Length: 375
Ligand code: SIN
Ligand code: CO
Image 1 (tube, helix red, strand yellow):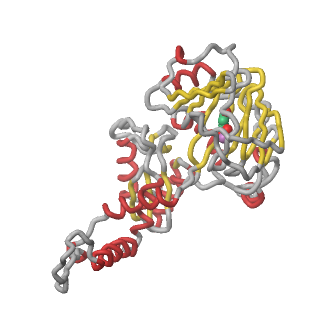
Image 2 (tube, rainbow, N blue to C red; image 1 turned 135 degrees about the vertical axis):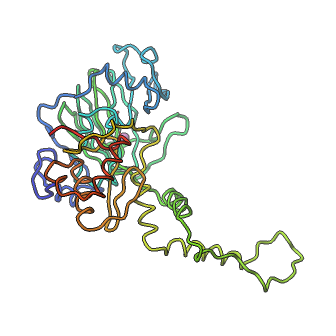
Image 3 (cartoon, rainbow, N blue to C red; image 1 turned 90 degrees about the vertical axis):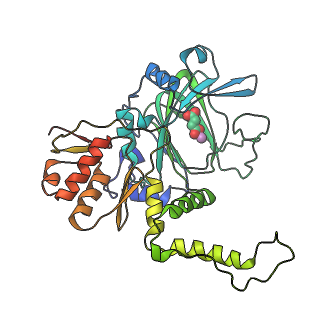
């Protein structure tokens, strides 16, 4: 993406300006971010997704100040009548299931894919919403249908009510208020308190959300992968304790074993590229509810496009796709990087591909990660 090109989506800012001035710093309200926007997914289509196994959905209702939460799958009969006020259904990861929604999310790829998470759609009846809360990630809230009143604030007191099944701020102190119409968009950095209430029903909001690696969780993920790295014969090192004295307290762990454990972790971290490989594999691991249907065999690779569920990234030494890593250099690396960035390769790009690269691409087609298209 050209980061210096002003975008209507960002109120005329370039992606470079937006990232410098707003990202993780301050909200941005964009009137008509997508002029004339028409929701690509109808209400029945959204409700059908909410009813599916393997699609994450929630129903939030408010009755007399009491909030209730039900997790999906949500068959249509589980949803209240449309005329009943104060309820909302939220469907996570719609980009994985719907091509036009996936395409919409591509407009936000001025943020690295490693940070982009998913597109959630909420449908709300009149007065519906999830209550005043804050999120730990950045979010773009695009109004897709109907109207929603957003109240936002940068409050310090982030105490949550402990008597509710969802995150509701104990004391919400809004500072600003906006009513969003279809095509309008509000960007909020992490930690900003917000409350969006549907005005008039039939309200749909699209939230583009981001992945926030958390230190302990990331360490766990990486350590599991580092432990899986192949260890050569010559690298095997067994604990030895020829100086271990006899002990009178057998249950006490020897400090020499602490040292050995620390060195074992240092060693794993110091293996060339092991951490980079573990990170790339982790970041491109498909979501838990994603599976791929094998593609047709023996297709001609004249033009290819990544499946919308495929995660593909790269670093200086590797190509990562759906949790697998490949060492790549030279022209093959160039080609695979182009595929990761453009999510497609045309005939001209493929004409220069080496036999090795073509073989790899064709195995990804077989796996359903990549699809061959007629030019
Ligand atoms: C909603 O769409 O109702 C909730 C989105 C959010 O507050 O993050
Ligand atoms: Co939120």
